Image 1 (cartoon, rainbow, N blue to C red):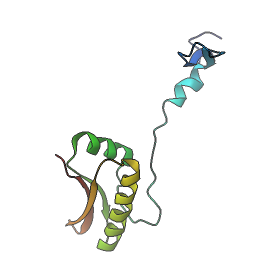
Image 2 (image 1 turned 45 degrees about the vertical axis):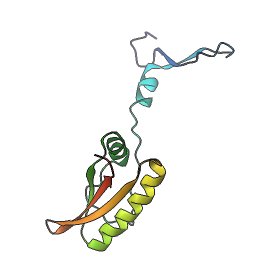
Image 3 (image 1 turned 60 degrees about the vertical axis):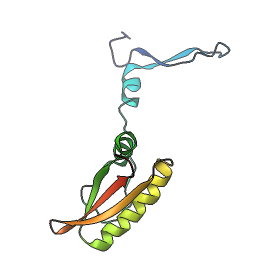
Image 4 (image 1 turned 90 degrees about the horizontal axis):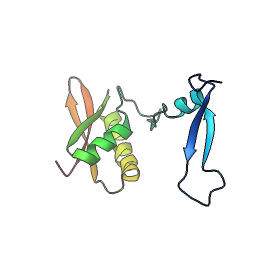
Amino acid sequence: MSVNDPRGPSVDSRTADRKAKVAERLAHRGCNSRKGAVKVVIAWPDRLHVAEPAPLITVAGRLERKGGREMVARCPTKQDAQEAAEWLVDRFSRLVPGLPVTANVEAGGGQFLVVLATGRR
């Protein structure tokens, strides 16, 4: 097939190791292109009642780079928000071990907001 066809050849991986038996391998261009289009997602547990949960990998990256505060979910009750906050602190302690993250529950607009914060700004 032509290199422009989705079934055409595309370099899948390369290694700088001179002792490697195969320095590169081929894959279909269409297959190779799809592999990079998958985003990592940390699923929120079904037991937590949250609306509009934030993508946690993205939140972790921003908090690690900039610090500060970020609203990550809305909950219908204070108890739901507290459960989500506890789960988030535990999850972030493993996701970004060197980043001290706290979670606060704030009332707002008839709902309860879960806000993550770091000590730095």
